[in-house]
Length: 355
Image (cartoon, rainbow, N blue to C red; front, top):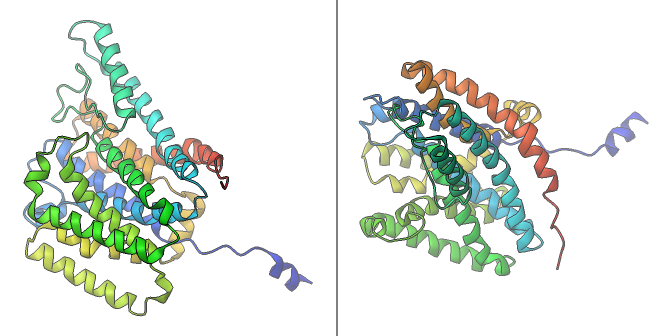
């Protein structure tokens, strides 16, 4: 009897490592920003080791974008209609963003040092909220706020948001063809080749293109996003030599970094390493999934303004700034996930109807 009851219980898959590594990537950005925002002449550990060739933030941001390409493509495949797909993207990004922008304005008002009068602050604060809400017209500062910090931006981490959502829209192009796996694979490979070519041979020309988003960054981040999407097409259970590919990717990374080649060549290794580790399971991943779940987005959103406030009030050393901002940003990220993001995501199936 007990055996039959156990057999009727639904099985749950073991949690993979994606939650862990996204939290890690958010922390890598915190590490790099601790040096940059404090005005230190030094940079983070890997930056110093490679003589300013690359920093932790590079791996963090590119890792985020790769995982996004991988998971968002899978979401596109599952979505019954384009509206459902877009709705899920909107409610994943905007609730947390709206709250952090509102809290940032409240923080800014508390430390505002008026140059003229309150109404200038009110206008700039309103513009700050609305401009950053568009994702494509970032406003970094409010005059009279953080003017004496080495960096005057309130939340410089928001720069990636517009690119992220732009890539979501790009994927919509293949929505009508998503059942044609081979055709989509060819399209993605062509896109990856074009973006890689642009990064290698036309990066200066791309910087000069007038567009809402920096086109050189579209090419740089886009190649990681599309590679993540391409790997989402692959049935990883059929990869016979996945461990061997992982080793080759690690060796290629060492070659690129050791030889100080164009960092874009890391796109041939870093996405695979991230996705290979991310899809594995571990006891710690299970603990994270049960207790913290997915606070990485909130950690990423709050870390920059937290560091700026710590610098404004206390002017800490880089080490103190790093660890204190880590604790506070992690706490805020967990609260953001459990009290805001997770609750809003209950509405994710609002438009999950089939045409």
